Length: 313
Length: 255
Image 1 (cartoon, each protein chain N blue to C red):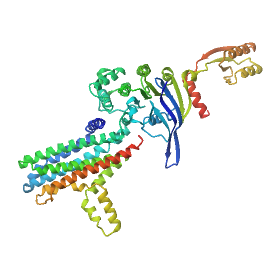
Image 2: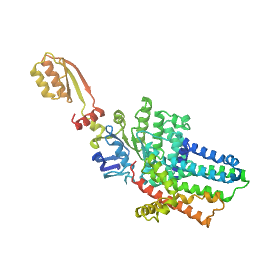
Image 3: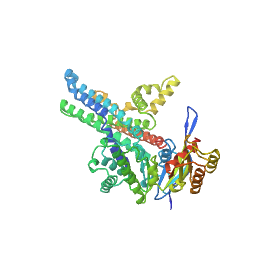
């Protein structure tokens, strides 16, 4: 499959002239996003996600590196006919109605009437904005309605590649689920979505691959399956009555065992054989197993582990 | 056409700004007061109406142009609406051109509105509208075209507050054409250099002020048609140069 986005060595440095400091917002980023996939771009606030998107869209300029979008160099105006961008906060002209805003953006794509009105209607229906709100001033829209309008404006040109920056942040649960489903449905239409989000549960649900960026550096990328591999079980064992020798044997099998409280200890192990061996050791040593709870690793676990490891904490 | 779509949107937004309406109402009010002041001085009623009307159009036009144009680009950056515009197939020059055309259209609407009221007042008082009065209105209009281009140029890199002072300051200095002209022949080398730079580099707004000749028929411009044509051409060329410079700067600006 062809690459919708191909990034090579993309770097953005800002220089603080007064303090003579250099801040590296994005550091030698290399990334490939295939056509037709929903790609999750994860990172903490200030990790460099929005800076990367803005460079790809030609809003800011890279210090080094290059990228292609749908086979054309980033910033190329002709490729923008196939692109869409939903910024983190959707800012609109408050004096306009939802319909007017979409009509304005359609004009920027030089879509003539009556096709323009048809596209506006299709997009507003697609994001499920109530028809009675279409011709209402956007000043009276709720956050969810504004976000729906934002996604509608991103769809006005029927784009092949969409950059969505936190499309579901700050929404109520119903609006959140609906917009997440709309984003997921874009894949069925063959569109490529570059999704920057903090909603890791959503990303895990709808993305095929993800990348984790931290302090401008790409730390990890892969399919969700690859990243969350390594389910484990947590055993809670009654500590009282276990000899030091028995505890030593347990620690040999599970070196990362947490001391826990004076009463109980928590042991995390991934392999079934090790779980059985620990159960045998505890029972042989006269102790009791309080619980064995299987744990499925989530994207959040992976994200937190990866970022903390990089931070050294 | 993309610049026209942006210009249309710019006009809609600008016409919502109350401050612009305040200046327009003040301008119209001053023009409408012309006949009243004329009654106070019956001998000079024609002069009072003409000078007050043209001065009101100039002053209101000046403030409308500056308060409209200084915000056009910065507000798009500040509200981040520019992200969704420039991520679409909109070239940066199209954006600057659209903003300029929109701002200029607002200035045109306002000056035209004040001009119509002014000419109606003259018709009411004098029973006819001398053709020369149109010249006064449309030269003010071209003066404001040049000021709009200057303000848009500054708005590509300066904050609105800084832009206000720079545009306003240059307008004042540009209206002191006779002073800067006299500096070009000064005996003091530094003053002569400064005068020459200011006189030839800054836009010469004073050339558009033909109020005196319109108000006082005794004063005449030799070959007025050529003079007016030259000034219009000057405004168009100078504005085009300012817009090209604005595009060059904005093309390199990160948003």
